[in-house]
Image 1 (cartoon, rainbow, N blue to C red):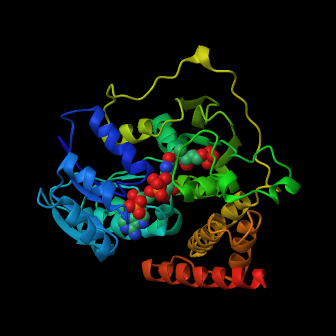
Image 2: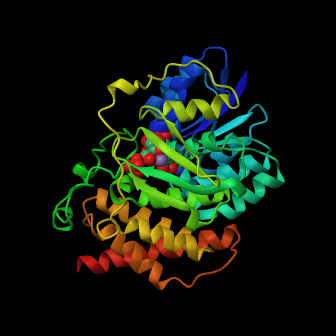
Length: 387
Ligand SMILES: NC(=O)C1=CN([C@@H]2O[C@H](COP(=O)(O)OP(=O)(O)OC[C@H]3O[C@@H](n4cnc5c(N)ncnc54)[C@H](OP(=O)(O)O)[C@@H]3O)[C@@H](O)[C@H]2O)C=CC1
Ligand SMILES: CC(=O)[C@@H](O)[C@H](O)COP(=O)(O)O
Ligand SMILES: [Mn+2]
């Protein structure tokens, strides 16, 4: 029985991971659950799965969680970044699912790798910001980084153990998001509510906005570079609005292998959990005769400049991807809060990137300093744009 910790158990990926666990009785034991502020849902998950330990972001949430659980079973409780790291390194855990949002995923991921744990990684920001460190550490500690992000799971499945030396290119598919048909003029008037209506996937708010700007695909290009060890010139993005082909690999001999399935995250989550086995779970099946047609087009970089910014940051390397990511996190939060427009998201990111003095081959402290600097400048830039 595989023993699992889930960091971000109350989110979209976390809840679907628990669905997978429910669908395969006897295969997994949940030993740790961590959430941010949703103590009510976490309490329900603790009652159902009985983990040894649980963690939440703040003291108040933890107090509410305790009250909700008493007088029943109360696991060992932890708080904040240290809490996430404690769960990530639990001696009782075999696999840590990292499904918190944003750059906050870096610390528990690194802690888990250094404790010799395999990681099922949904949190793409970790590889964007610190890909070189995370991949080096995972090689040093001989741990697996098992991709959960649907495109990277697809590429992993297509490669089936083959190395980057046999790859002509990786083709990452993008749905194009809710606005892929809108003109530049129409994009000026879109609201957060409109951007949160993803055509194919039901995800957390941050990744859903990133899908709408195509920053999600940009982050995924950088994620793919680190996971599969290929140059940016070998990673192509293709818009495929139906999200049936989750990505593909073209090999040196011209053969293209694609991975397909309905847009349902439980499939890539399950593959990461059961790897190397494939088990019959509860994921709905793709029926070819139900498909209305599969279409493909190149991304429009004029309407969706975030994708170009991500390639630029990835190619620059060093601290630049951390700056791209931090500025984007701030800009997305401001857009969701109604402070800036949709078109201002890439504008803010670009302004911050332009002012950054890049540092090559940074350590974790230097990355976090660049992240902090970029957040601060993005906030100032947003204030300036409002005057
Ligand atoms: N959703 C999807 O289909 C996909 C998501 N991803 C990636 O997976 C990651 C998670 O996405 P998603 O599940 O959609 O996001 P959600 O916003 O739905 O969930 C985020 C989870 O992280 C928790 N959390 C946030 N901050 C902290 C913190 N500081 N400490 C502890 N827990 C915290 C939240 O807790 P709470 O709610 O209790 O505050 C919640 O459980 C992202 O990096 C995303 O890009 C990748 C591919 C697909
Ligand atoms: C489900 C998943 O992996 C998301 O990252 C998804 O890729 C978002 O869809 P698009 O970014 O293709 O719109
Ligand atoms: Mn994805």
